Image (cartoon, rainbow, N blue to C red):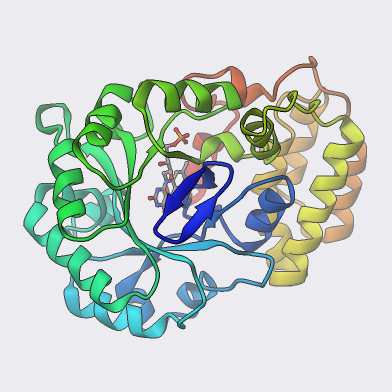
Length: 351
Ligand SMILES: Cc1cc2nc3c(=O)[nH]c(=O)nc-3n(C[C@H](O)[C@H](O)[C@H](O)COP(=O)(O)O)c2cc1C
């Protein structure tokens, strides 16, 4: 069990915050398939204070969407203070501060992973959030800024001293981005240094990888990110491991289509026909990884504009190329850049 103050999760896993991905429809699908807790998309405290409509949308939730974590990005105490006032009491179960985002647009403002270089400011921000929040406050960090400044252990201690209720460590440096392998040793060093719960993040593409990470780091829980893209079933597989049940079978093609259709329906319901379909296009790419005729259908999927056309494409999907775990499960390192999310980055992907 993972306990963050009075928040208790029987299965020690959660859906990690993913900008541009962990929207309400995706969270609801993940929860349906066993995800015990989810983070919404990262929210810029500044944008929230400016009343940006797009940012306000990131706060959308529903009663089925709990427990929910909201992650704030920022470095200005005043904006963070105001952002906390704008988040309705009772609307989330955890507030997280982002000290992990590697994107240049963010770090050049001194936000995200840049906070790893300013431990004092980071502590101050954690204390500020703690003073305002009625729910647990957590911090997401990376192993360090670059290989010559790996400081997750020191940062972990700092944020724990400042009152953080848990820390989530992505075991890569900022300069690594999402490449290379996650460093479990650094995550373990944080776990050994603090008495608050530590959540591990990085390269969690299967229930087996989750088990290995928890064993090797001694961490209290894990945050699943790319491992859930096109594979929300990963959560029921993790739940089976912790419930000491046999691993559930991989979804067959009909079950996959059902989940895709429901995801599309939720997306259209939330965002309307045009934006709902546009939002769903990237999920189509992920869900269809490893399917026989995906190569032919994917270029069509990124041009589809109506729910009807998208449903027809889903209908046309063929059998998986091979049985067994989802293709992402076999990868120790990031997605295949020719097929996965990296390919989408050229078209305005946030990460
Ligand atoms: C598309 C995408 C968006 C992400 N957005 C965020 C974010 O907004 N906040 C955050 O803390 N981490 C973000 N991350 C990082 C993930 O939460 C996670 O720490 C990282 O992907 C490592 O886990 P993985 O190797 O299992 O994917 C993002 C990752 C991806 C792939």
